[in-house]
Length: 327
Image 1 (cartoon, rainbow, N blue to C red):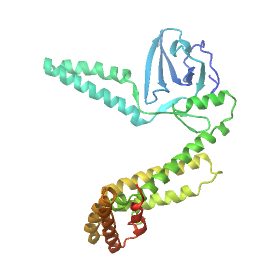
Image 2: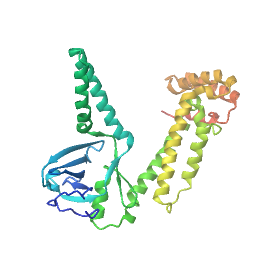
Image 3: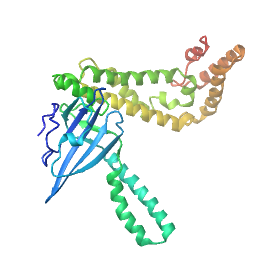
Image 4: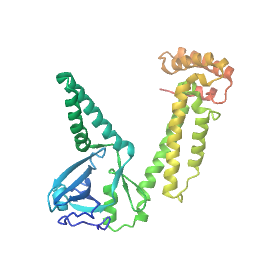
């Protein structure tokens, strides 16, 4: 068995018990993750290796090595600084299914072409029986992978090299969460706050997509609730809880935006929809017109329309005046 997050002897022979993975660190601070499976049927033995290059983490490739004796050095790239034992990485079910769908589509296209040229269903069946499993094995795995770290941190090919380097330097897992990951999660939360603030300052967006700013709309209410929860995080909030808050905020924000785009002005009471359409056109004119007099006239008209609508989630006079800021 390999000791996780420790160096591995690359001369070591891969055996049936080695259902393990390694991270091969390159001199340029990138790496290749590889996992091995040794199989033997009587005198026939083979080893399969799947790997993900951290420079191209969206796919996972694989190869087969036949022979009685196989070492780790036989299976991994030669240019390596260190080889480190890591937990097995895995892919979501949808990513595994995607490869099968691609293999099925290619097999169907090939079978259709064979039928067109030969008009032989028997040959189509034979080709399909050979091609489908071959493609399913040879095609690279598509989609992201995750590493099951000892301290349940969300490791991916993008950060596993940094994590491994820290572990090799003797940093305990409990201290690894903290600065880089916490800052990343806080940046995600801050980014959503900033984006929502920018949308609120965009008068045309406020008019065209009012549901995003109306707390009575259920998707928006869930987002605003998540935003309030995010306001409650402190320096002592555990990283796992912080991650959950950020994830909820991201999901609810996307749902609220999608809902607002879908319903558009139809979110407004029916008696205000025509006014909103007029207000949207006038707001665009106020923002885009190069003529100062035309812009001022448009802003006055916009204010009159919005005041007549008297909806709390629509822009008010002070917000409209922000359009007057010097260009």
